[in-house]
Structure formats: C-alpha cells, structure tokens
Length: 145
Image 1 (cartoon, rainbow, N blue to C red):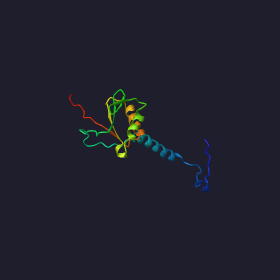
Image 2: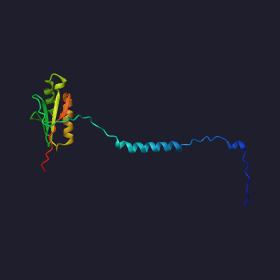
Image 3: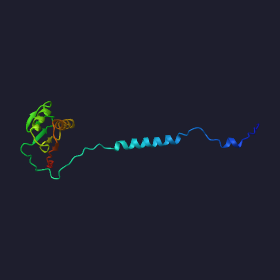
Image 4: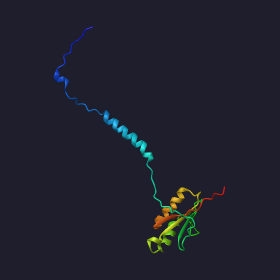
C-alpha cells in the first residue's frame, strides 16, 4: 500500500466558504410551521353578546316586535305567520314606522329544536330590515324530571 503525501499550504486553510448554509433557516421555518399548525385550531371566532342578569319575568312592551321561530322553521311576527320570502319586507315595513333608532329593537323567541341555519337567517333578515338591536327571549328550563 502506497501512501501519498499531501502538502497543505497555509493560504488554502483559511479560505472563506462561498456556499450558503440553509439548514438553520429550514429549522426555523419548520418550527414556525408547527407552531401555526398547533395554534390555528385554538383560535376561536367569538360573537359578542350581552346577557341580562335577570331575564325571566320581563314583559314585552306594547308595540314591540317579537319574531317567533318554531322547530319546523316557520316564522311568526307578533303572532302572525309570515312566509320566508316576505319576512324581510314585512319587518322592514314595521320597523319603518318606528321613529328613533332606540325603538328599532326586535326580540326573538326561538324553539330549542329549531335549526341553526333558520335562526341565523332570521337574525340576518332582521338586520337587513333595519333593526338597530336584536334580543333573544329566554324561557326557564323545565326541571320537572
């Protein structure tokens, strides 16, 4: 076995390396990716609501608009049945008779079995009709088991 001697010159020892090292960059990007993947599902979309402390026993004032939604998705405005297509138009007419913004309040009484899509459509329709405030009427839970 032959050994070959290699002579290393001092000017070749300290020459700068022109290649870019991307390994630390890739490490940082992967850590950020993992953080975003873990934290994104934890971010919640909230709807701001105000719940009165004692909502039971409150009587609706005369002339107040009350929209009822049953479990079948049928709408009633002040105890009168309204078709889904006429809902916004009917509410707009009733709200246009109100003088001030403070009077343009619509209360909703929703059956517990009503579909989520129907409830959201009723709330959106009231906003489109010009309601300034929306309220939900709550009934006490029946605890007679």
